[in-house]
Image (cartoon, rainbow over the protein chains, first blue to last red):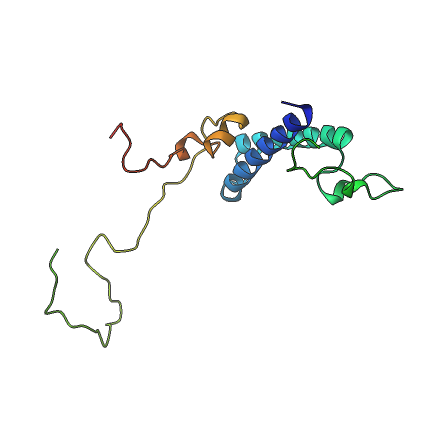
Length: 83
Length: 67
């Protein structure tokens, strides 16, 4: 598996975990274990997105960090296979 | 279950404080309050469709072999 695919899988994995724990926290807003799980996976998710952005460009158009060019449209779309 | 063919087809009025006494009711669900317990690693959770082992109830067509 290439690095790009590996990072995408990691992002998907952490994103799903965050969705799950967020639903739990909706009804258990003071649960310390759920809050710790949320914080841990939020950091892991952010780190994986940061690594992806650095190496493969933006995943969403909010992550376009190039001030001189709209590089969002340069990259293969995240769901496309290796270009 | 009786067919109750002789029951009136339509109820015109309902008394105040009317409470059906036939239980279980046709549409009433109950869910226990979820408590945080051991959860799956994120990788396992994605594969199973939930991070909560208590909610990990895969659909088996027909019946599970364990039944």
